[in-house]
Amino acid sequence: MKTELAGKPVFAYGHVDLEPGESIIAESDAMVSMDADLDMKAGLNGNVFSALCKRFLGGESLFVNTFTNLGGESLFVNTFTNNTKGVKRVTLTQATPGDIRTLELNNESYCLQPGAYICSTPGVKLGVKWAGFASFIGREGLFKLQVSGTGTVWFGAYGGLLEREINGEYIVDTSHLVGYEPQMKLKVQLAGGLFSSFFSGEGLVTRVTGTGKIVVQTRSISGLAGWVNRSL
Image: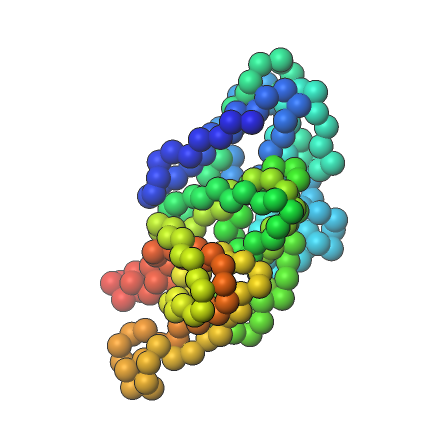
């Protein structure tokens, strides 16, 4: 499988070239285009219960799509099959304008904010985990998505994506934390003193504690919505 990310960082999208027997699993609305001889079938994102959890708690679609080249079969209901022996391409993206990153997992796990997942190779599992009230207050949701296993994951968010290596503590504004390693802890606090926190416009922030890598987005949908409302 050959992949290529283009249009970065504002309008990122990705090409996936599937060799015979290879497959890619994607969100149901992630496809931009594909070769005509790739078959596509839609299926539940896991079993019925887990699919409902991912949809309503994790912000993901109820259905996923699996693109498969000739010679391979998928355990998922949604399958794209290439009926030729050549390499075939599918192009994927996210709903909002912004950046996309590639995450390589080797029997590991990583946490993503709801809606950040775009696609993955078949060896990756997508689950929903309790994130805690600190995550909810920090506008990251009560539940978090956790990708685990071995393979490649594409994820994205509105705005640019910045990676930070944390060893101790780090402050991220609310609605800007996209991904973090599962051993890291989140705590919501005031940005400063009571007066400065609310009159500076910062309010609450998320304190990330631990050792590992995090990814933050330079823009947030809630920030855009607030700006639009003030401008109307």
